Image (cartoon, rainbow, N blue to C red):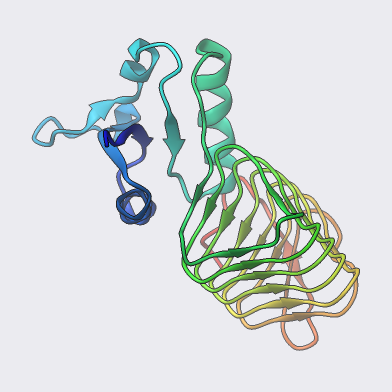
Length: 216
């Protein structure tokens, strides 16, 4: 059986996670690509622009942890090469209900659970041991931290982030571009572009999702 080829954008910790998942799925990472500012000629990594020369219908994965950067790079690639494919990568240990959906370019890591009628949209990152319960929606370019939980009928907005071991209670919404800090409990709706922390979570400061995603 011939392994499927995958071309990975990024060469950091998340790309290593992607590599580990591909081994479980019988994919083969053919090359890694980075933007010019990260390029090191002493490595075998290629410059991002070379992605635009890939064969028709090649499979590409954008292994960029920052939500907005993942959006920016994937949009550039899709605009210039609409024929390229962005398969979701799902670790075999994940439990996924038959009624759940996972969009293109998304990554679901080890021992996560995606329950009935949950909707994981495009280019989402679901970290190890995360829980997305029934009827919840995780909108595009957002991230769910390790061991974080979205309980039933919750919504995680576009570009938003919930940290490790955090929990969003049933029916609550995390607004677009917002963040819930690690080990926090969200008991009410979180407005757009804010950082909340604590148990229960409360407003901490205005959040710039383009820059602040790792400054939590």
